[in-house]
Length: 132
Image (cartoon, rainbow, N blue to C red; front, side, top):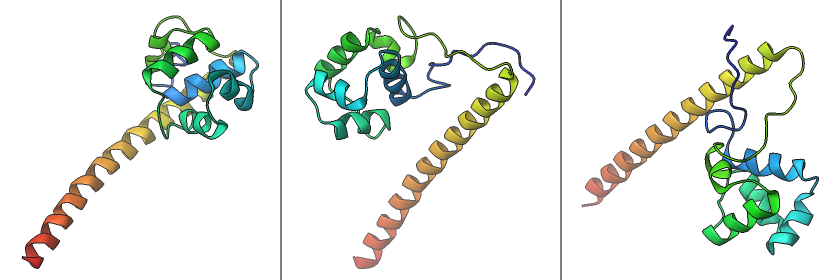
């Protein structure tokens, strides 16, 4: 990929909600344990947020943005008051290529998951029809 356009490092295309939480936490020099304690949640809950396995409720999202000193829209979408992209090494082209490949893979995984859901519905329907 030879595109020289700067990517928005924390945008929805380049990073997930969990990536933005982890990046903001690290920018504040907080461990998962210390951030979880400040938020009144378990470390396991914070890990789930950072791994995109679950999302906080609105009140925790507001607390999270306050503690991390970023806006709620930035946490959700990467747009608004948040972090700047990390300093890139000299070979930024390789990073852009990796990010592009990761975005493509994420899209393919989402499409495969959607297809799997359709197939599961068809299978359940076929099983129901045979049982009837």
